Length: 240
Image (tube, rainbow, N blue to C red; front, side):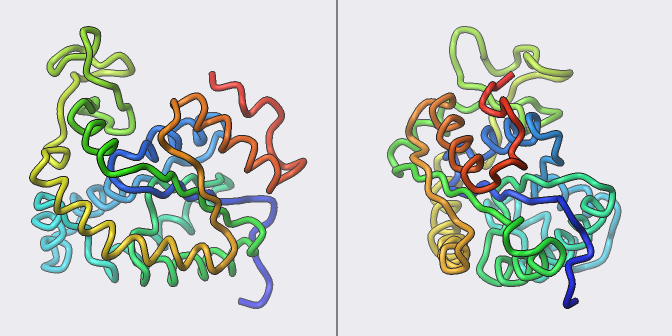
């Protein structure tokens, strides 16, 4: 396509290793902007539930082992869903996608064609590995919506009612320390090259993810306000 067919829309990808807070920040961004919160694992599982082909079946075992979905399969699912969402008029906040170099090359160039380069942005949350381990040991999620993340404390225990929506709090299997090691290896080997590609394309900004949720949000808000100018919603820093 030589001319972007979609106007006045944008996509933002929030990237980072497991436990970096990308899900929380993507959720806050999507909520404030009224954008679609695109969680690749959720969209992948929706696709899996509706398809029974051998290629799709393989993805189930990979996910349970802490491995990423296979890139060609993921890219096909993400591109199809992305185009559908954008054509409905919604902006998109990606939660950790693209996850591999081939996905980044395929998805980002696809988005450049759909929206134009200036409407594609990525945020990398930079967090050290020891901090990541500490966070994942404490992380709890709602069993019916994993985008709702809470830190284990006297107020948020496994089995307690979810503070937002239906369901109960649980610990995800993939947050187990043994699975975390695999996930970090996957991140270093597969996702870091994707992040480097985004950097070379000029769409990436690095944010210190070791700050509080509020301070990380503030830094993201400042950067996106600078990038988007008048298109950035006034008051977007008010996390309500």
